[in-house]
Amino acid sequence: MSPQPSPSNIMQLGMAFWGSKTLLSAVELDVFSELARQPLDADTLRERLGLHKRSARDFFDSLVALGMLERQDGQYSNTAETDLYLDKAKTSYIGGFLEMANARLYRYWGSLTEGLRTGLPQNETKEGGDFFGKLYSDPDKLKGFLQSMTGISMGGNLAIAKKFPWEEYKTYFDIGAAQGGLVSQVALAHPHISGGGFDLPPTGPVFEEYIRSFGLSERLRFISGDFFKNPLPNADVLSMGHILHDWNLEEKKQLIAKAYEALPNNGALIIFETLIDDDRRTNAFGLLMSLNMLIELPGGFDYSGADCTGWLREAGFRETRVEHLIGPDSMVIGIK
Image 1 (cartoon, rainbow, N blue to C red):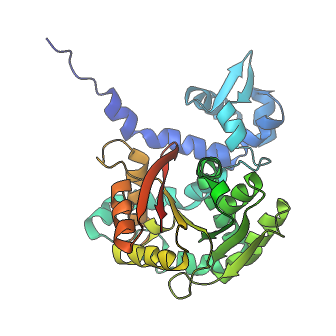
Image 2 (image 1 turned 135 degrees about the horizontal axis):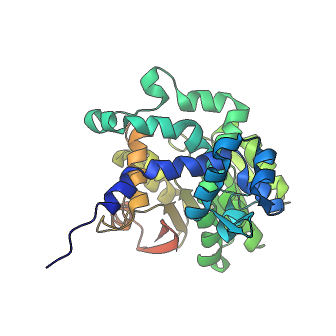
């Protein structure tokens, strides 16, 4: 006889927000940045973070059980992953996106059911606000948001800099460049590459500051513009990272067509997303990211590699391919 099914997976998933909020609070409290300096015992770590005695030990040990911390002989330390990606002192820090998730998305996802019923965003717009309007009018908030985009993309950025055949090209612009996370990693890994980033005007100072921090200002420059209203920069390679999923199908195709027009013959377009697997069964993160577009935007949705290669072919690209990058991230490459 078959064993009786266990409810374990149902309960783990149904209560997964417990673990999620524990991690998000740890990022907010700078647990990982503190432990990156040195391992600490529970009392010292609690005092450094300003936590009450009651649940501090449970909090730290929950992070151990969740695989986010290690504990040996009473000393807590980061794992290899949290030390690399959640220490604010490192350029590989990805916690900016988690900070935004904690401050904003966590509560808005509480209205997912309403979004599924109405098809409408569930963020500040539902409350009469304009998140992106306020964001781009506040330099400090904009910088934090752009840093979060660098964070969520860093693993993919490093992989693109390594896997794409950059030796075959000379010039490169990232479209919707945000802070400049991708173009800077490419330029650091390939000293012959020059180009820069294209984004809305308020992004410029944040981009230029970030590029200066790597000593890349002579090779990388910022061009301001609206990618729906203005021509895209001409370069051997263009990229769009976490851009297309913001828009509806018509708008996605419009941006791809504009990229095709800006590229020379044999030029390349790189589209970088948390692509949904073609069978729509395994990349849960990609599918959940698409639900996040429902929460955040009126028409955005994520898509599969097959979807994207179809749009590229429709635009005129003669060659297309899909390559996995890291984790849930993949890139689609189109050659004109």
